[in-house]
Length: 452
Image 1 (cartoon, rainbow, N blue to C red):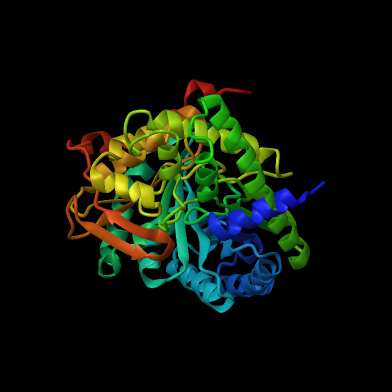
Image 2: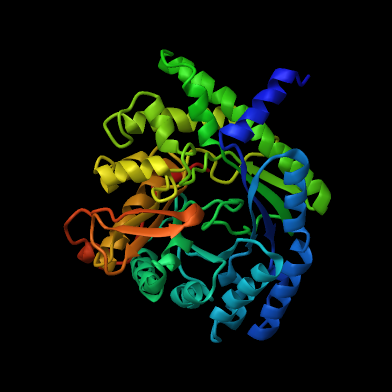
């Protein structure tokens, strides 16, 4: 039974603690749009997306108004375009990106994800062409997001793809250097990419999904931090219990929105992603949660343990609140999108090396990190390989979203504005991994992959 205390508590979370639903994402299969003629395929894609998602934005706005819950983003994810491009790979693949962007503009969504390729075990028809087109595609579109899955626990790591993505990230930043290298902020490299992720830039609609689904991503770092301030002397076990209960309440809000959006749009409900997604706004930071636990600054010794506690408690509490949990589900640590992370990076306490350690216990990985523009392609590939290895060995999703700040050095600033935020250019460890990266081949899957 819902009581008045629960209602008032939820209202306070929304009004004063930055509780929101970060995104309603409609996943749409494009497998029936495949055509040898790329222009016909693009027309089919545009028509299907506009037909299925025509009411997505108005429905999200109506739910937000009626329930008083802020729904920040309305987004679309589609079948990895490399699969669609396989039938017409000798043609100009970037036309697919233009079709996606046109649909996003028509519908009023802020991002559309799925300009993607899955190459964890090798390249198939369409993969090379799509990956090579990513820099141009992201430089000439406003709403398109791209992802490439280069590894998995079952397949190992495709080191040829790792080497390729170092070059692609650098080129994407260069082509958008006049816009603060924004293209690289819309590109993520995965290991163990989930097929139902509602968050950008890594969202795509997996081949195991239905024709169309609604996935919702919640938020609420400010709620967790505010709750912890009421228990300054609690021990670690009590903190974990407090976060679990808070995550349950946050996720119930997401479940409500997901079910209502599903009903109104006539589209099956997919999953709720439990992830605590921060913003650059004051009071909406994962780093500040860790500091509320007792750390002087995020990044100091003890940070990885505190983050492990947070991530685990969020999963335990949130899982009980929703019938279907999926996506990434945990705690995000995107540097430029988190006010506390930005401050910690500026102070020099939070380093790239420490962030890598933290990714072993949190959701995603090295996210929205600005690095010097003169960092070599091989170093970028080395960072990707390290992060993919963490995901592969630990059977978890990891990812890399790096922004080489062309023309800038460590200590300078890069600013995107909005949810993408901004922050300092972070120093990269010296040393050249180019010989290792250039060997190519496939890093074998770990022994724990043999579970059959």
